[in-house]
Length: 355
Ligand SMILES: *Cc1c(COP(=O)(O)O)cnc(C)c1O
Image (spheres, rainbow, N blue to C red):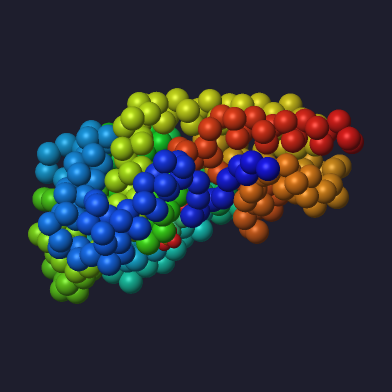
């Protein structure tokens, strides 16, 4: 039976990307050695990093003066690296979920943190609007896609101060105006590569402005200077990222990924809104096109486990909602074909007919 991978992360990758990475793990570039057993400084590997950085910049149309870094530690380490490197006195944060909250917690160790708005009152079912960003903040931090709740800020906001964004779960799903940000980061395991890699886009001239000592490995300057090779980077996930960047380019770039994402999301949300058994969990205008959350309508609540079993038997994988929201979550990252979403919609319709 064909499996449809709706996992939230680590998550679906194009088959070609997995096959190319697996092949390099057996024999890298015809060298007779595995990608896993060569030096990151081998002359064959440097072009992998160079090409990945170049494609990353090309696909996102990143302006001059920015560096792309490939690091370890996940988005979670960036929650601390960001304030370490950029927070001198005060920073503004938008609280749109668990990940935003974790970023806020770390920032508080470095200076004053202004939480400009929060949607915690409704389990983060909407994106706050109409808040004020202090003009004397060093930066304004947002989480563009709230993976757990299924809300998304799918535009580049206006801000009186430079922005920093956690784009773990929607990077490469739409064009971004990178010039509005001094830093964009994320774990690669949602929409870019396998687990073990963190990407950081950083504006070079924004680094080095804080007065504190920054430990070498946590200082962005170290990794800008070292071209992500100050120490051993995650070699296999970088190779996998390169294969995926090539796949994105071959499939029309981020504009095409944006179109695919909207087609998938429209199909699934239309069914959630139509089907008497289900309802969405967040404000319609803030719905994520990447992580689509839904629950059983109140009068059908006791059918939840039945639907999970029904869908699992038909090849749906990873549709269980996060424990804080319950119900279901279909994560539809770049590699998810419309066919997969159609299969889920078919499941929902067949199940409705039984009840
Ligand atoms: C998954 C996720 C994280 C955590 O990423 P790690 O790489 O596991 O640290 C942070 N932010 C968002 C938005 C996420 O989806």
